[in-house]
Image (cartoon, rainbow, N blue to C red; front, side, top):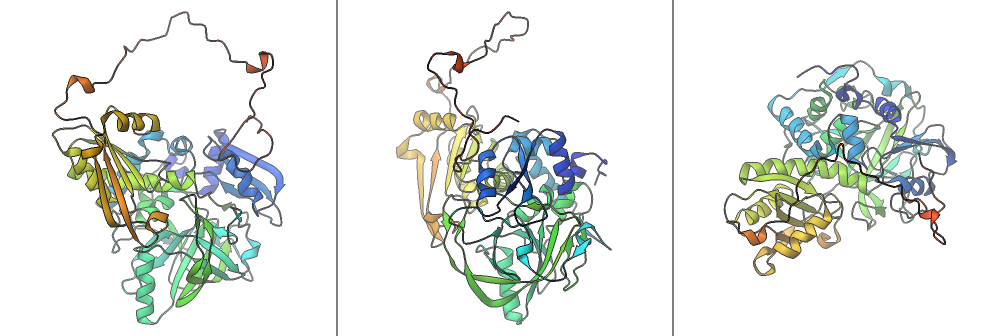
Length: 492
């Protein structure tokens, strides 16, 4: 593994503190200096910037001594700049890092101490953490981007994953574990062995570890230590510190680390929560997490995300990388894959295909469903279609799709239970083969224009000034989802 340079992107993304410093230097950090209430107001303001080119740091959070950061994943351009990669190449870069780990895994190292151990709270009280309550219908404050580290109770293999946690009391959390996740397997093993399951919850980590925790099981089987994926991103071994209450480690440079345990069979009502689907996940009995210790940096920054574009991007990148990898192995001519934001970064894959022979459109469609089970919809288009442009995809659907032969329905298929269409675990999936007939004929050729260089030409482009027209008022600035109301945002 090549050694990362001190100021290289790989070194920068290994620590949330250096990430925030880099974003600030790039002009990609909005600082909210006024005091903000963490209950609804913080998320409401963040939503005004959601999807924009800058992340947000709330410097004064009402009732708390430490700031809150959000927006790291809501712009692929921001993330690309941070990682030193073009935004459109990020899925390919993620795939490259995962392949590097698969070929030459580099295990994490356990060091004697780290920034996360600078302070250990004398008593466990989750109310002391600036945990926001985001949406108006949420059941309470939530940890929603923390990385969980656990060990298989039988084999001791480490696992990293991301789950949502609702604060239920000063030392009590409710945890959602999606079906089929490694944590579900670990908890079942702990129940069989009649032991408690220790975990650590690590808050405020970089994208490398986040991607390691979100890597699909198809790319990181249960018998592998997927924490090594973070090492591949950092170009250096991930540093951990030993747990003080169990054998489960913590991330050495996390902002906060909670040492916890689950008692198999202990449940409490968790939810509702504004999920990636844009709907509220329903309240239901779910596993209880008991917090035993809270460790933190001397001056920590709490990290949270909005369950929208940030999830679409962070999860979508991993899904795209996994599907792209498997499709290229099975289907000749696959060029690229994109998980659309309209599909919540989870449920709709658009596949770009350079056709080599008839029938590859449907083959690519079926392979994509197999590669990423949460998908509900797959659209396959020719490689002359921009898969990141909804208008271009719609053009392919309206001009190249034959509804009689190009639409494939798959009833009673396994799906993601957070999607209302798969609430019972199964539902109907649909594929659209929007590729032109092969072999190609001229009537399906797109109109093209000559590429002309404009350098040296005398071209006058006036500035648009709508306020100069009588009776015309310039529009106010909008940001994000536009749900929080209020006046225009100042240009930054």
